[in-house]
Image 1 (tube, helix red, strand yellow):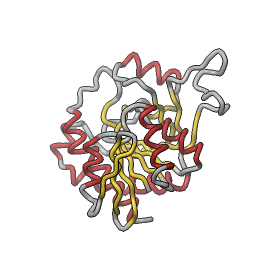
Image 2: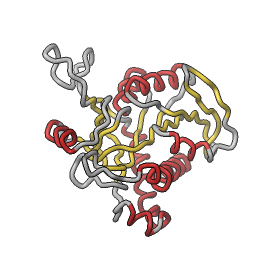
Image 3: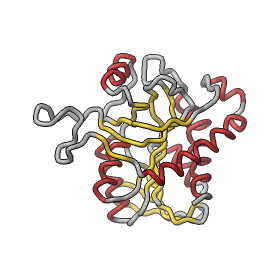
Image 4: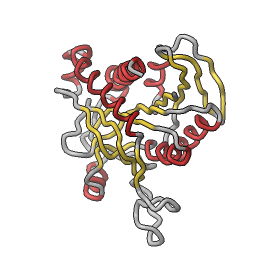
Length: 247
C-alpha cells in the first residue's frame, strides 16, 4: 500500500509510526519504504498541484509496484454543512479547471469521454468506516481548547464528489462560483483528481480522505500550522492506524 500525504506535517506523523523506514530518491522525491502495523507500505509527499501528483502516482505504481493507494490531506469545504474539522471521503473526482471547450464539453477530460473518475468502492468503504470510528473518539482526545479554537462541534464524515484544480481557492467569490457550477462538490483541493486519473489508467485502487481546514472563502482565517499539528495530522495517523489494523 502507498500512503500519500499532501503536507509534510501529515507525512511526519505517519513516519513516526514506521519502525523500519528506508529512504529512496526517485524523480526528485523521497519515498520511505517500511512497515506500518505489520503491512508493507511506501510513504511519500504528493507534491502540490496536479502535475506533481500525477508524477508521484505514476512512480508509486511503476517503480514501487504498489497495489493500493491511500491519500490523506486537507481541503476547503464547499457544500453546506461541510465544516472545519469534518472529513470528506471521496467517491468521485473531477478537475474543476479542466476546460478544452469548444472541442470537448467543459470538465470533460480529452480522450476519456468523461469528467469524473471513481474512487475504489471497497477500499473507500473501509476508509469511511475508519473515519467514522476515529471521529467518534477523536473530539475527546483533542480537548475542549482545540475544539473551541476551531469552532468544531461534532465532526462528521461526508462522502461524495471531491474537486481538484491548480488554483488555491480562498475567496468567497471563487468558492461560490464553484458551488454554482458544481453543486455536488463537497470540497476542493489540488491533487486528488490527478491521482484518480492515473489510478484509473493503471487499474490501481485509490481512496482519499481530506480533513476540512477552512471553507475556501474570505472567512478562512484558521491558524493553519496549528490546525495541521493539532487536528489534521492527528486525524491522519489515527485514521490510517484504524484502517490498517482492520485489513
